[in-house]
View 1 (cartoon, rainbow, N blue to C red):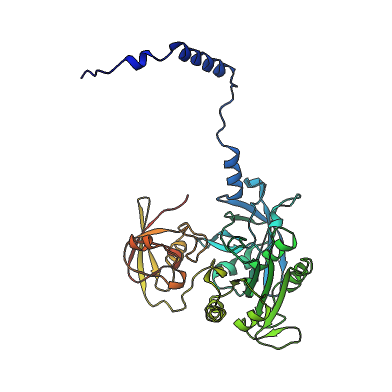
View 2 (cartoon, helix red, strand yellow):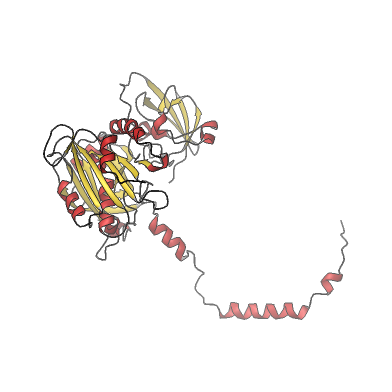
Length: 398
């Protein structure tokens, strides 16, 4: 087929100008260096250093506490990690584990302040793990980790950190047990001048002897210039210099400032259930109440029923057993399959998978799915429990 078009506009283009552009282009090509063009820009390198998919570390030190251990992790340069990524105070890392053939990851808060990732003599993270924490991952770590061991970590994750746009200038922190670790990180950040807000920590423990990191926490508060205050609350004994009872709304009112403030809380699920009721008495705006969600959602009911869980991973299909009281994520890991997961509490969305068939139960308090997710059958396996045989399409990250 022959096309006809008006050639007049083309004839008006000055050919000499075009030819001169060709000449200039050829000269620049000839003068260009022989080295290949940049394959990665500085901005990309910075982004990867701040948000690495994986980090390799080794245990440089182990400190014993009354009912916990602290592990100081440093970069494992032999495996390619020259420095550990910077983090916001109270963020966590997901630790990769292989326990008896079960491949899993477990989130732990970086207890040290962000300054530990800015050291001129090297970077480090400190993870503090309590012996009474539920789940076999923490128990296995406490029984097996030792100085010199290699550890695989994710980059820093989570949004349970202070944000001056979102949060009030003063934070009242409610902590229980190992839930003190994110607030310890915040306290260090304030003492080091990295963060700029007032922090009052109401720390609930059973007895004075059972207070985790008491001396270390007092030392950080002492060098904060009065910006970090720690109030110890004992439930099982009365002592001079301590509050007695639980972390009540009345206690928050006693130590909170006049006017605007935020409440952050971190602790076991039983504490959250109690605090949700107590905090309603304060009539705080919902945006002023934050809680840390990283960690396993655990069903207390005994497993009486076993279902079949069929996984579709890029066309590879495998069927495994899944108990009624364990999350789909636990069943996948127990079978030795590496599936994407980080927070283990339905918050981060990293384990986002498609429910092809079957029915699951998702506790309302950890159901972080969007409306579209629910409509089109997407679930978070870390907080989804089988109510029938399941077929699940999983999208691994590697």
